Image (cartoon, rainbow, N blue to C red; front, top):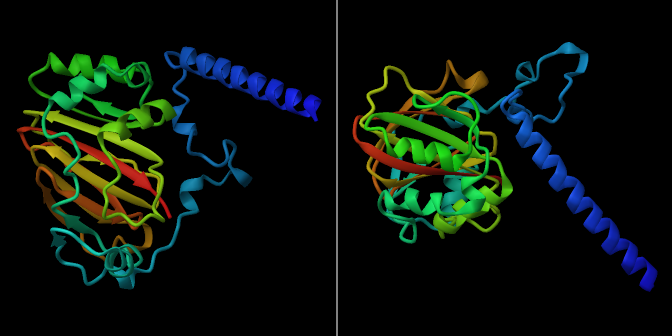
Length: 269
């Protein structure tokens, strides 16, 4: 029995060191090959040469063809949220639910002080102030020196995700079955007037967009087979509000000229 415990401990330590070494190698590769888009692929080599984008999920467009507005609640019962909205792919806004979230731009300064966040390499980054790969902390420091910019990225490093969760708790109105948060995003814009909408490439079944401060213009577009059937929804998200929607919808946003910060939490049941 003692031998089994020893072997288990040995292999656990070996596996930890092996994965740590692998992460270091991958980080060193980033300046030469951006492999991060592969993180969410089920297969690196597509079967029969058919791109995975062609094998897309089909949605029930009867659920969204009649939607012409977004319902807004101060608070909402879990059963109503699940049965009337999430299960039916109907977006909604909750105006109270971020009481424990940050309220101003000092939130960004606090993030920079967290080493696990600072030294992580973000995924799906889009900005006008940097090109190439860099750490989350360095891009946030760089952004502070610009008066006009847009920036968003996904945290795909586990430690960075955990760090952001310390500041942006899972909203209390969310049913327990939607846990844990799998990915999170940071959006930060300052006095930037965009000529086109910025695309957020979400991957999970459900997303919550929490507006930390400022406001943001969001557009939800129906996906795949519902593009020609269901309407495009234009939404203004204000400070303290949460937009909740499912994977039937693609999200884009447009910086509206002021300064704003938002965080997106991705989860599934």
